[in-house]
Length: 307
Image (cartoon, rainbow, N blue to C red; front, side):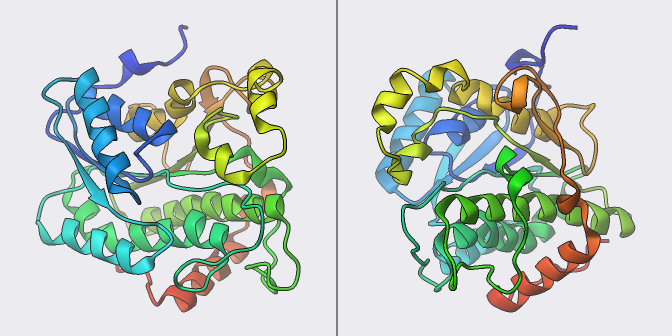
């Protein structure tokens, strides 16, 4: 069987999608692919100039694409609340929510506008809040899908409920891995709750493998420029193939509720799309329920009735 690719995305005409972090990299590739298959796509990001450039790029690739940009800084929960409120208020269904926005390995501990550790706040709390608040719009669609982008880094992570935000001990990669474990746990726990409620909404997760995008620039990894030109190409791939697992989860008829997709190559770093490995800690229902409770306590946002 040939690898699943962009040509395999079913016709998305009549569907509406929201892609967070869509001004560059994997998010831009995913938004362009969905628009190219006929979806009406809302791109979000924290910079209006980059948003305008992203819209121009999508339209260059797909003249006549139905796309718009919404300014929404994932480090500010007020912006996430405002984004969700505007989408719910317009009364239209939301068929696809692709929780893609994130950052990796912040060089030092920093906090969001709301005082949360930056990676925990942007990578996990922001999509948690956005997803919870968009349930009414997702419920309007006949078969909506929520796709949350996790990472192979979840494999070495454990949730430290006594220090979730690295206030006592901070490790840049440890914080990133924990936030991505939380993302995967959210997707799986949300699937449990949706199935129990008999909902038609699907919750899935995906990871891009090791995609060489500009997400690494903010990490200030030593010698990253040299590594990108020499070592990285040996075990990474680009934004376009990195977007495929999320697109598969969002559109493929064979994608399963609660499943996790990623590249099938060595170490799941790159390769054709297929089922990805889920470590046992990501499937722990007790820890997941506790994570949801903590997120609700921190943000003041809980999930509504999912039926």
